[in-house]
Each structure stands twice: as structure tokens, then as C-alpha cells.
Image 1 (tube, rainbow, N blue to C red):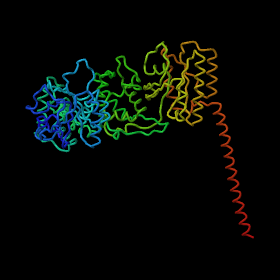
Image 2: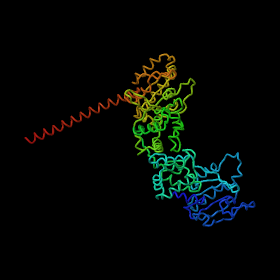
Image 3: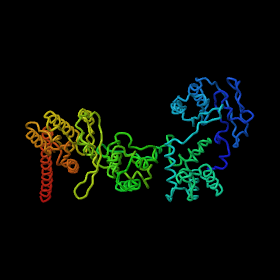
Image 4: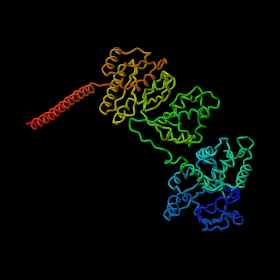
Length: 583
């Protein structure tokens, strides 16, 4: 419970769940915790003190504590993971562990390594370690503790969920409902007054945003302050109870069982429903405070301030969508980023929808359908508005670009282009189902270089053959880049021959340098929506189809002949029976 008035007057380390907590320390630096007569600092401290049992009434909660002192040598920290923690596990001592680094006053100011950094690997191995702190018995100081960013973000989301009227403060009724949800017991009016009084005393606040309590109730600032206070006073279980009730795990992320999983067939993809897109559009308008269709980085960060971190800080999402002149995102670019995340990782998209407050069933915000994609560097860059660069940089790894394409009739389609390096095609085709999720394959070649054209046609045949062999045939489009340069000799004849032989459209000429894309992105979408018009056919595939048609036709004749024979036999039997009966 949020028994704040009593808690604040109580002990620094109230361990309610333990019958006899065990405190492991290094040398006599624990004297900071002792009563005043024992707390006097002595110079002649023995190397190791005998086990000491604190009086039952030392803490207001009357929790007995046993203190066992150990050596102050550096090896003590190593022994923590090699002896003490394994020993507690072997003895099946089910208690939280607090690790305290002493002699903070002797630390070199230039020393950059903190106890937390040193302890991080150990805390990963031994989950029973609740926290680690640093202190100095000599100067009576303890390193001030603040909430970690991920905890702040989680608590902010919880606060917003509990602020039912969205007025930026928890009223008495909302605070009480929060208390009941988390601790199964209501707050008395006097307790609510006590909570607010504590916050007002600690956070008087000169500005509106600094106040912990306003005329409407407890603000987010006050809410976060209370949890920081709980942790400072050793009441970590209070904050963890709140986090658990709202679905968070030990990593302060939503637990796996809350996030839906999506099982997709190889030729299926995921996309947001129209309701989800409309919600995200409203979110964009809400956070685009100056209504300039430019969501600045700070505004984007504000949207994801209730998620553990922004999901678009790393590839493949970073720089995947077109940026405005002010390095922001237009509403189309914002929705395109969401479309890309839903396409690549629908569970993560749903998770982030939950973090930013999507109402209702977030799993219903995604539907499975067929996929749309493919491309090449300059083409991909022009797709999302990146400038053309003369300096050549070979493509060494896959990348994505996503944007909205306007079609006739006001129809909008989200197109995701996946650029695959030339040497990555062979690896891609090793997987039988690699083409299943592909809506269209685009082959881009340098129209001034005959060797580039030759390699593009070889790749086209490889992809077409793979589709014929596996049954996952995809429409294909050839793009003739660098149309601003002179074409290689016989270019028109060669391209016409290949197009006619394979039954696909002639190459689409473009010039990224001149900004002439020749509506290629609209053509890509159109070809993907009418796949039967652009599926290439190899010589082997054509022969196989002719053979299959011949076999199917023969089977049809055999079937008809068998039917005639059966009917004839049946008619003869009927005739014979009638003749015999008449005889």
C-alpha cells in the first residue's frame, strides 16, 4: 500500500517480506546504519567484526537483521559471485540481495567506472540481487539515486493510463482506483491528504511543470517523485508491484505473454488496419504541436516517451523514410515507418502501439496479407527523397525504403523497397520459399553499360527459373537507370528481344541524376497488383508448361473415353437384360 506518511517516517531499509534478512558488508563500514552510540567513527577498526544481530526494535517495522562483516580486500567483490551468492542459492535462501560499495569518499574523481558497471554482469547472472548502492561511513554520504530512464518511461505510461480524464493529474478518485488495482485496498481520505502533503513539502515547484500537486491532483512529476522516494527509502517492492500489475517484466518491458505473436506463411505479410492507421494519424496531429506537417525529432521522442526506447533509432528503421528539410517526418513518412515495422516485425509494432496507448485490442490492429516490395540504390534513394550522389558506393548489405505512392483515383499504397546486393541474390535463392513473400522483383541496370545489362538479364533468368521450380513465381520489372547517358550499342534490340522472349514489359528508362523517375514507383505498384501480366517465362519453363498442357489434354481424352466405355457397357447390360426377360 501507499502508506506514505508512515513510510517516510520509517526506516531506510524496511524489508517486510523477510523474517531475518542477511546483510553482507565489507569491514565496519556498516556502522552508518547503527544507533548513535555505536555510530561514532573510530580509527582503530578491527579488520573483521564478528556477526552482529541488530535489535528487533532498531527499525520501526521490527524486522530483525543479522550483519556479517567480511574482508575489505578487493577480492571480496570476486568472492561475492564465487562464494556468497552461490552459497545462498545452495542453502535455498529466498531473499533479495543488496550490494553496497563502501568508502565512496576514497574514490578517485577521475575514476569513471561505477559500482553499477562492475556489478552489471553479476546482476545478470544472479537475479536475486535487488539493487546496488555506494556509500561512505566516514563522510556519512550515500550516492543519490534516481529512477532509470526505462523505469521513468514505464511509470509515465502507467500514469497516463490511470489519468482517465486526461487532465494531466490524478484526482483523488483516480489515485484511489490506482491504489485498489495495484494493492487491492483503498486509500482513506486522510491517507490521500498525507500523500499530497508529502509531495507538496518536497516539491513546492516554482513553475507549473515543477509542481508535484496542482488543483486537479497528483501530477506526473509528483507521481515519479513518489516512486523515487520509495526506492530511496528501500521500498523497491512498492514500485515493482506497480510495474508488475501493469504487465512489466524484470527488464521493465511488457511481458512476452502480453505481446501477441503472428504466424505467417511464406507468402504472407502484415499491415496495419485502417483503424490503426487513423489512430496513428491522430497521434501525429496531436504531437505535431505547430501543425506544420513536420514531426521534429523531439516531438517523435515525445510520442515514444512511454516506450522503453524509440524503436526507430537503429537500422532498418533509421533513415528508412523520407525526411523533411528540418530533419523531421511528414505524416506520410511517419505512417510509412509504422508500415515498415509492421511488415518486418508485427509483434514489435503491436508492442509499440500498446506503449503509446492504442485503445482496445492491439492485436486486432494488424492483419495478414500479401507483401509489396523490391529496388536498387539510386532508385531507392529517390523513392524517399534522398539527393542523388555522383560518388559511387557499392551496396554491401540489404536496406529498406518505405513511402506512400499516390495512384489514380486518390488511392494511396504503401510501397516497401528492399535493396539486395548483387552478390546476395544467390544466397537469397538458396531458400526455396525466398520469393514467396515477394510481390514484385525489380532489376535495375546501367543502361550505358552492356555488362550491367547482361548481369541483370542473368539475374532475371535465375529468379524466373527459381519461381518456376518452386511454384513461387513473381512478376518482374526491368529498370534502365542512367538514362541521361548514352546507351550501349544494340541496347534497344537486346532489351526488346529479352522482353518479348520472357513475356514482360520493356525496361523502364529513368535518370535519378536528372530527377526523372518516369512514374516508376507507380508502375511497380501497378505491376504488383496485376502479377499475371508481368511474370517472366524461361525457355525451360515454357517447354515444361507445353508438356504439362499436352499431358493434361491426354488425360482429359482418356477420362472421356473411359466414361463412354462405361456408359456403353451399362447400356449393353440393360439391353441384354431386357432381351433375356422378353425371351
